[in-house]
Length: 227
Image (cartoon, rainbow, N blue to C red):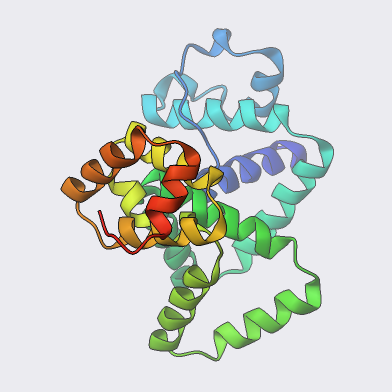
């Protein structure tokens, strides 16, 4: 097998293992584009013998690879090199962590991605200090740290994240849009009410606030009377 073909095979494996692939409908070999066939050339002879799921994953990987910029491709090579250096137990922990992430509600996945982007935007020295501090913590200390981090973020979204994930999409969207219009004090009040509520209380709160103007909503949420 040529070196470039081997590299493409390894890159596809990296994409499969890191869960970057999206679902796609696999087809016959001739239905692939010329660029996709070039990426998947190592699998050409065995394509028809592959299972449908494996064809879908490989085709998705080829589509993703051909759409990447040169910088993104270099990053994939770098990450695959890192993956190869991991011990088997470490690889399994990563795969288990990814499976747990995929099982989370969409709202929680969004918040985790948002926090990850914030972390990546930090200066390298600050990221190193955070990693060192994290590595020195016990499991209980890590749990406490994450709880403090969630509670420290301003506004209703972090505190209300779990209730929003349990709501119907339309209701979660309504409360999220409401929160975006409120002032800081009203946001905190809304977060507390959602966090300490039940589906019945959320429905009642939505009905009470729906017919009020923004000014009345602010006064209602920051007043002494509870819904």
